Length: 537
Image (tube, rainbow, N blue to C red):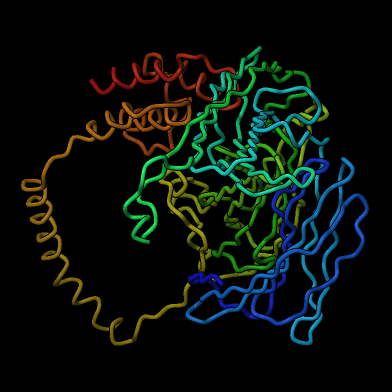
C-alpha cells in the first residue's frame, strides 16, 4: 500500500483512468496496462478481445491518497499486454460498475513498431521525428532516445548530442519515461527520452552521437559491517558502462517564397487550428468584451503574438498569452491561449473581423491560411461612452497609449457612481482649501525622495542581462531591453522603425527577426552582445 499526499480540487465522483507504460511498444514487447479506480469500489473488469494484442491479467494494487485532507482509496488493476503485429492498435474504453454506477475509462492507441531480438542485450537507439521525410526551417521535431537493458540499473546519465542547425523548443519540456518491459518473456528496463527541437537554419547538419552512461550494481567483495549488523549496506559497488549512438545527418530545406503573403505570414511552421470564443455578444458602450483565442498545433508558438486588428467600429488590446507544450507519443503538441479585449467605438451592430494567420504546412509543403469565424457584437448605449470622445473635435479618440505602456485593460466595465450627496456638497470648498497644501506637500516629498533616494544605474542590470546571452531568444530579449533604455521607451514598444538613428540597430533587428524562423548566423549572439556593450559603455 502506498500513501500520497496532495492538495488539489475536490474529488466529486469516482474516476476511472486507463494508462499504459508506453504507447510505442515493439512487436513481442510485453508492457503493463493499468486501470485505476479513484474513490470508488468495483470488481476487476474483463477486457474485450483486442486484435493484434495478447492480454494476460496481472496484479491488483490498493493504495491510499490524501486529497484536500480527505483519504481517497485507489485500486489499480493491471494486465500484461504483448503486441503481435506492427501498426496502430486501439484499446477501447473500459466499462465497469463503480459503487452501483456505470463508469467508462478513456481509450488508448498504441503505435507498434517491428520487434527486436531478446538476446541482443543493451540497445541504444535514437531517431528524429519526420512525417514525410523532408525537414523545413522552422519545423518542430522530436529527438527520441531509447535505451533498454536486461540488467538492473543503479544510476544512468544522458549526454545529449550537439544539435547543429537546431535549438531546444522553449515552451516544451524534455520528456523522460522509465518502465519495465519484456521481450519474449525476457525482462528489460527501458528508458525513453524525448527532446523537442526547432530547426533554425537551412543546410546539411550532423547530429553527433548521444552518450548514455549506466552504473550497474555489483556484488561487494569485502565485508560490510552495517549489513552484518542488520542495518543494510551503506555503500554500493558499481561498474560503469558507456553506450554511444550512431551519427546521422539531416537536410533542412529553406521555406519557399512562392505563396507567402507578407500581410498574413506569421512565421509558424506546422499544422495549426485556431478558434475564438467571445465572452459576450452584447455589451454597453464604454465596456469591453474579451475574446478568448486558442491555437492548437504541432509546431512551436514560442515568441508568437496575435496579429493586430484595425477595423471600423472597435479597437483591440491583447493580454499576455499562455503557451503550453508537451511531447506525447513522439509528437510535439502545443496550445496557446490568448485574450483580446474588444472595445467598441460606436453604438449599434459591430462586426468583429476574423483573425487570419498564414502558416507553412510541412506535410504539404505549402502555405495555408487558418482563421477564426467573424461574429456580430451588439453595442448598446452606456454611461461611459463619453470617455471615447476627443476634447478637441468630438471625434473618436483612437490613440494607443494604453497598449504602448503594456498595461492590462482586461476586462473593462463601466462602474456605477458611488459618491454620496454629503461628499458632493462639501467636496468643492474642501478642495479649494486643501489643494494648495497638497500640492506643496507633494513638491516637498518629491524633492526629499530625489535628494535621499539611492541612485541606481540601470546599465548595471542591463550589462548582466547582456553577459547572460546564451541563445537567440536571450539575445533578442537583451537587445530589446538595451534599445528601450537607449530610446527611453518600454521594451514592448521597441519597433524596427525606431532603430534607424542608432548605427547597426536596424540590421540586427532584421537578423533577429529572421532568426526566430531560421536563417540565423552562427555569430548572431556575439554580434548582439558586442552591439549592446557598445551602447552601454
